[in-house]
Every structure is written in structure tokens, then in C-alpha cells.
Image (cartoon, one colour):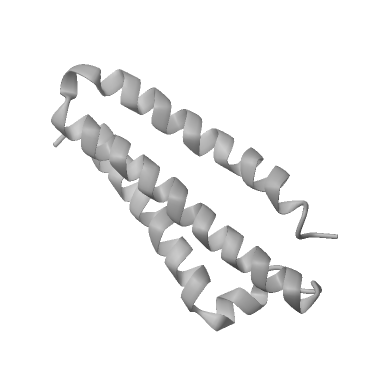
Length: 100
């Protein structure tokens, strides 16, 4: 297994674990988005958790594809990097509807 594959899969697992923790752990959910109305807070927590799960799952697919199709490794690494870089900007833009 190449280093790029390991890094992609580990980073994806971190995103998936964070998403699961945000959705299932009330203590973490209470810390995130403090000062919001209860309706917005629940929707925001659900959005953040599912967003992390989605990004982690998509990147996990790229990590698995990188493992099986070594010929296209550079393409998968570039797509992985683009998703990781753009995910914070996308999250910030979408999350503004919950934060007022």
C-alpha cells in the first residue's frame, strides 16, 4: 500500500469519525454553535455531522480507488486534495443560513 493511499484513507476515517461523534455525542453537539436558537442549533448540528460524513465517504472512495487503480493515482490525489480544500469553503457558505 502506497503512502498516498494510507494518508487518504486515514484522513477520510478522521472525517467520518468526527461526523459520527458530532451526530451522536450530545456534549460535543452542545459545544458547537453555542448561542443559536434551538431549532437552528439542531439543524446546524445535523448539517455539520452529515457534511463531515459525506466528505469522508467521498474521500474514502478516492482512497480505495487509489489503492486498486495505481495508474490513476495522481488523478485521485488531486481530486482528494480539491475536495479537502474546497470542503471548508463550501461548509462555510452553506452554514451561514444557520448562523444569524
